[in-house]
Each structure stands twice: as C-alpha cells, then as structure tokens.
Image (cartoon, rainbow, N blue to C red):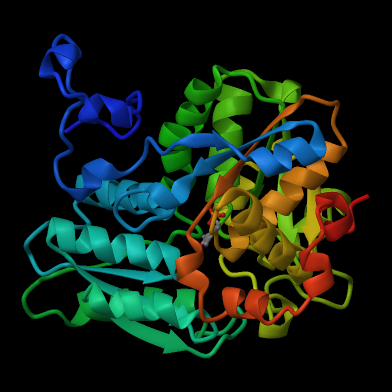
Amino acid sequence: SRPASTYLPPVKLEDHTRSSRQSIVGVPAPPIPEGIEGCIGNTPLFKIKSLSEATGCEILAKAEFLNGAGQSPKDRVALNMIQMAEEEGLLTPGQGDTIYEGTVGSTGISLATLARAKGYKAYICMPNDQSKEKSDLLHHLGATVERVTPAPITSTQHFVNLARTRAREHTASSEDKSKGFFADQFESLANYRAHVKTTGPEIWHQTGGQLDAFVAGAGTGGTISGISVFLKQEMGMGRNLKVVLADPEGSGLYNKVKHGVMFSNTEKEGTRRRQQVDSIVEGIGINRLTENFEAGRELIDDAVKVTDLQAMKMARWLVEKDGIFIGSSSAVNCVAAVATALRMPKNSRIVTILCDSGTRHLSKFWKNVGEMGLEEEHEQTNLLALLGLE
Ligand code: PMP
C-alpha cells in the first residue's frame, strides 16, 4: 500500500465523465487504496472565498473532515499509533488484542474504525458531556464505550486515567494472553509525528511552500505541533511562518502562549478541569501541558481567544456564504484565521484546519447555533462586524 504521505494529484470529475475512453489513455490511473486505511490523508486544501474576500488575505482550509476512515485528522494519528504499536509488538492483529483510549470522540472514532479494519477490539473512555452522536457512532462501530462524569486529570476517574487503567487490567487478567494497548494520544509522540509525516508535507506541497501563517486549536496539541515542526524546522520556514493558536473559552493555553503562565498562583496546574459551561466547543482547549503540545510550543508565535458566540456566528456564516458545514473546533479555527488575517499585511496567505463535519455536532453546537436567534445579525453582510473584530 502507498504511504499516507505520498501526494496524489486530485482526479478531476471530468476525467470520469468523458465519453471517449481514448481521452484518458496515457494518464496513469491513481493507485487503488488497500482498504479504508489507504483512504487516510491527501485531503484537499481549498480557499474559503467569503473569509478571503472579507479580510483581503487568502484564507485556505485543509479539509481534514474528508479523511476516509473516521473523518477527522485523528485518522492520521490513530493509524500511526497502531502502526507503531504493531512494530513494537504491543499489538498483534487477530489475537483478540484491544485498543484502549481516553478521548472526547474523534480519536476514538478513528481508532474504533481502524480496529475493525485491522482485527482489533476498541474500548473507549469518554466524558459524558460530549455530543451524543459521537458515542452513538462508537457503538455502531462496535467499540465498548465507557462514558464518565468529567473529572480533573489528577483523578483516577478522569477519562484518560480510566482508559490507562482498563488497558492494564486487561493485560493483567487476560487468560488468552491477549493484550490491552493504551494508545495515549495526549502523551504518545506518535500523535504529533503523524502530522510531521503527513499533514505538514501535504500543506507544503499544496501551497508550493507559499504560506505566511498557520492557525489551529489544540486538544492534545498534536496537530499544531506536528505541522509547525515540519514547516518551521524541517522545511526551514522559521520566522517566515507565523503560527497562531486558536483557543476557546475556559482553556489555559492562550495564557501560556501569551504570558508564559497557564494558571494564577491560586490554581494548581492540572487540577482545574474545563467545565461544561466554559465552552460548547468540543475537541480543543485544555488546562494542562501535554507532551504533544510541548513538542511544538516554542514554535507558536501568537494566540487568539475565541468566544462561543463568535464560533457559532462563524459556523452559520460559512454555511450561508460558502456552503461549508463544520463542527465547533473548525469554527474556532476560522474565527482565529480571520483575526490573524487582520493583523497581517494584505494578501497574506493563511492556512487553517477544518477538523470535522457539523454532522458530529448536531445535538450540541448546531442546536445552539439554531437557537441563537440573532436574526438581525444573521442578515449582516459584514463579517468583521458580525464577529466584533472591526
Ligand atoms: N477538533 C476536534 C473535533 C478534535 O476532536 C480534536 C482532538 N481532540 C481537535 C480539533 C484538536 O486536535 P489535536 O488533538 O491535534 O490538538
């Protein structure tokens, strides 16, 4: 099978609809992927027209919701974590081995899909405040789902700690010698390395190395770190690329990037958990420093705080103006991309990530968007005024 990092030029629709087969003779057919895992990566990068027009910059989006297995950038991460575990003998297909993970959803969905494809079981611990469609989907994929009440990371009941414990329990008690593998997306460096290996090179190739800023939120931090490490260090862009963190309400990362501290003197690192009321945004924003965030933290130049209201307005705007239906973290990224554009010279090129589709967020984020009731603003044609960024 071809490595995920190999760039394939997109096949044009016309190529398939030409009446004469003659016209495509001589054009080498793209290789046919081996299974669903061959459909990961090589996602399109496209210009968001309305945001580009409103800012005078070129705002480009990497359509990561088009990854072919679990429909998010976590496909890349899950595949890399499984492949590394197989190489290290921590997982063997067809032996009844189980992949354990603590996740707010996307990584679990990618792992559960790939577990099916590769002959493993999946056991997912996730907080019970995440949108229901994600846990429903996990059930349909055949994963065992343990939904837990949100707890601080210092608690044994935190979804990440629980997944680690369940993996240990599996290995300790398995009579058939099957293994429990804790994927550990927050701390496993296979996470950000998946983006160093694939997403970063794809962005470089698709832009011809011509980009001025990269904007992304951080959950584990794998995406922002991996892409920054590739572009700034491996491709030598250094200071020529501005990396901007997009951070939702309730997250501590903005303060870390802007002021070097994450917590006030009275708050102990890691003990504060994001409350549900902090933000309805899922997948990004965190109050501890993970290995994956740390891997690229020094490469982040700036941070933008994005409110829920801005994210909701952006999500609705993108459907209305561009026909783009995205989830909450993608909306945060787009607000931060616009805010970044306003701080840069005209015609700068800014790349951001569209992580997942709005269909993953119907019952929570989009329900809120639907109930927003800002009919007057809804009619607005001035994006910057709508977002309060003028
Ligand atoms: N968006 C969504 C929907 C996610 O689930 C995640 C991962 N939790 C992210 C963005 C953030 O990606 P990363 O973990 O690489 O920082």
